[in-house]
Image 1 (cartoon, helix red, strand yellow):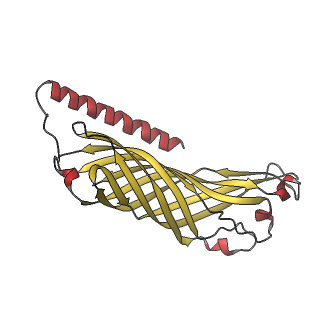
Image 2: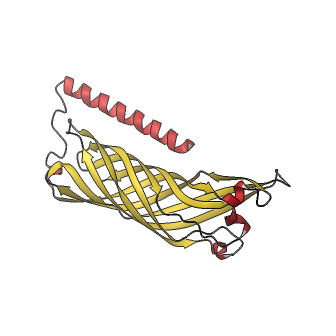
Image 3: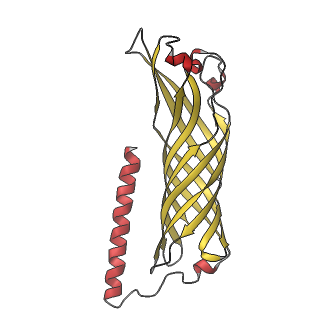
Length: 240
């Protein structure tokens, strides 16, 4: 999570400095005109996005683990970094405060679960999932009133995700396995910044998987788990 926090702090610092500079220009009689004054009148807009994220699995232990079914003493999901690239299609709904956004993207993940054993507590075994997902989020965006060249917004919606590539060793029956499709609930906050020729919007988005991804194949890795879902925190930069 460290690099996301550092990125968010730096981005917030830049935005505060930009807001202060704009206020100073306004107070001195310069820069009072709005950038892209008719931008939000458009019914359909396009753009692209870049993002960094930290993700992990959320797990629920099984009764087998609770009853000390084998030598496993601990199962810990770990945070791992990744990144995403996507396109933006935004539809205006009614007035300028509401938009419906379709933002298909390609996301690259590395998630891992750490196992610790009673007979050798120093020997930690990691089950690693490295895969590429095609994701199809549909989001509802609600914006505040525009103040100069700034406005805040919130987004929420659902995303259907499909795995298109992953490590071949995931097919090994001795490994922990997960299904190739996922549905996530997504929500977040962002800041629209209007520049002379484009709009830039940094966004902090959270995603939580709904279905249980765990494949119960009776091996040692899966016996200790009853449920496996996803969780992600992303810093996304939107350009429209």
